[in-house]
Image (cartoon, rainbow, N blue to C red; front, side, top):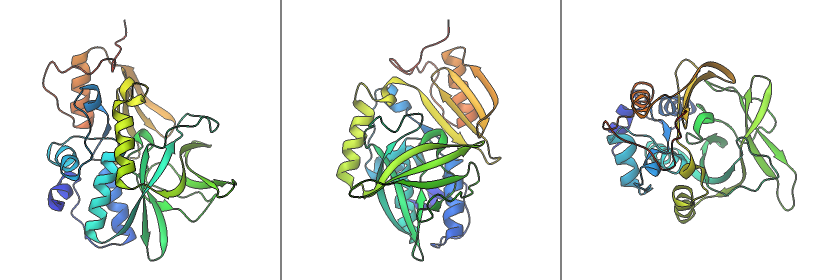
Length: 273
């Protein structure tokens, strides 16, 4: 892979050795440089998770993507550097009650360093962790550059369920649910097909972008609403007035550039009346 172009894309010029310090620096740089977004789905262009297509889009074309693109790219980068990395599957749980069964359409990474397993994920939207945290320290609050994280387990036969959680102010919220099952390429291809093409997929029904900032804040767009927040604290929020206003925000706040006149949808965007 074109590792040098990737490092330029995330503005990282540090060492390239498989240590925890390097993993932390690369994950933070990635999360603050390559936005989460589903805009090609709304443009009807489809999503390819072939290595060459992902690298072209996220690195050379200066675009973003969702979990199958983001974490596939990071997995290749970490493997190239020499990390031991395994793709795992999950069900997204953000704002979804645990009793609701969601599709197993999330990809995240297990990175092992000196026998210690770390959870790494740059593809879960506005709650993508900006640093790794340990998979083997259950119920323990762990710091990241943004929100604290933890892994909790729920007893279940024959094996427990695990939940990745983020702390927003004083409340722990579920991010995704997993079983430590690996997600081979064929499962990622099936999940990506459902996510990008199924009429009930949230990626077909909403416009979504998200990007972490170095100051510990995050910016995001959900349909016609822009938000700048720190944890659960809203710093700035407003409705996006026009399609031209949206294109300007995508450029200025996320580094995503589209030709004048670009329109996302349908349905994609419902402008306020």
